[in-house]
Image (cartoon, rainbow, N blue to C red; front, side):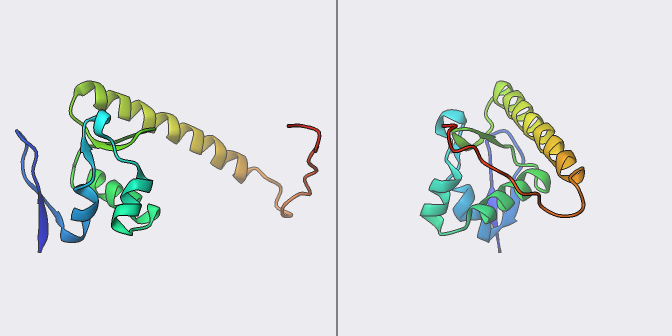
Length: 120
């Protein structure tokens, strides 16, 4: 049995019923965003599971869920869609830079790192 996700003016999307506890806590519009931490506390699901469900809902079911520093929210405006796109693109660029740095580390293992205790 699935959970029917419905938004006014859009087609109905049937997602697995196990996603319903997560989707039901995501607010409409950025001002009603819900953090992963809050969703986790209310559902008992891990942060990783919540992120996975949101990713699947966006990529496989075409549900417009955005992320911001305030948390997850259902996209309501073109401005929210653009802001979410830019946020994700910026994060992706930073991850690719970090991945390239990791790839280029010496193959002999982790280096010894000395920390200067005088730096606050």
